[in-house]
Length: 597
Image (cartoon, rainbow, N blue to C red; front, side, top):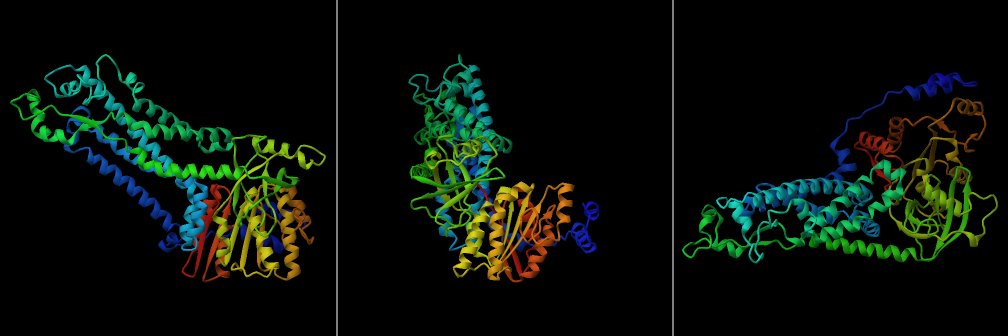
């Protein structure tokens, strides 16, 4: 890159030296301190550790709970597989209780508005709801696998006890209990003329277990990044199998297949004394009665009924919102195949950086897609910029007349349903004195709302706690600049007119550039405005040197907390999060925030 830059026509020595300095600068790696880690990740780590500790406690507690005398005879049939089946079942109950809570968006928005007045750090954890949702799902998958494997062994042991019809063996005697009235059996396989597969599909536990497992496999596999991004509809539809999953989960324990000795029976048949004397069971001259067994009452529903009610309420709120009338007041087709919808809805109130879910019934009655609001709260409408990248967005683009040359009549515009708005990390932007905004491609949308709102507050002479904004926009191609450059041009000219140019510092990077495009840029570098964006600030090529940028910001603002906000790919998020950790010192703290949908 350095050689090609230096060979460009009209390239001055001082500019080449400056570029060489940036391109070859040695990356600084300040030592990570526990204070830096605690400021950015302390509460997140604490929450994860507490969650893991509860899982570990439940596993150990319920594993040990099935080693007591009540389950002695059950262990004679099943051995340690009994505890290995029941311990993960308890963890499954706990995690299935949690799995719905991170996707209750209205609940999270309410909690964010409540918590942020007490603790900004606690409110930031709500922005990682999808990450926690995924972690809980992985935990459910793990415990499901352990639970299934253990029960496969259990069914084999149950079957072996029936097949080995030797009256001198305790497992066979235990399997025969309850053959008369079938009221107090221990072995759910009641005959040696069947097999575990038949039992699996003829019992409540077996059928619901198959339904739960199949639903979970489809949900998890369709949630893989490659499928979710390339075939969103597959992800969307299969994710709604969670309804079958929870129905099966509620009824899974109603068959009471795993059975233990009743409390009353323990007084008449102490397993520690009577297990070796099973030939005497039930005799008049024996103090060992025939043991009586019963299944535990179903407990899963007690764990999940609360979250299920919350989620049902969540869906009812969404349904109510989706039926409120939304009017499309303006449609703008941007050259970079980005559709802008300006809309109004009665009683709609928003904050900067929030997002909504949009449904277009004429395209699909089932699909809802999240889009960041690009309008400011001070405007009398709300808007979203939609990049045309898939089947659904292409269909919406055509429904709004994007493929037509003549303007679309208002009455021909499609009906739109809106759910939201919902809170994100960007809501906290005005709680920092210094803010760093980083957008990648269409990820710049939440910052459009922020920059607009900042300007409105400035011209209305409203007090703004934020004193400095550093804005970075990374785009792969020049076409991506088109729709947002107009806003930046307006802000640039208005700030110059008001003599407040030092409030906003912005840098635009073209990350994928061609030789001829770079040469064309440098030929025109003496012009006042950039030939690509039309801004006074010149477009930069390549990727930012984040180490240098963070070092400069830290030196400019000692003794402050700097909020770093990103809407972009995970790789960029990891890089920025690392920079926040390494550049946080005693007198300056970088707090990382990332948009998650």
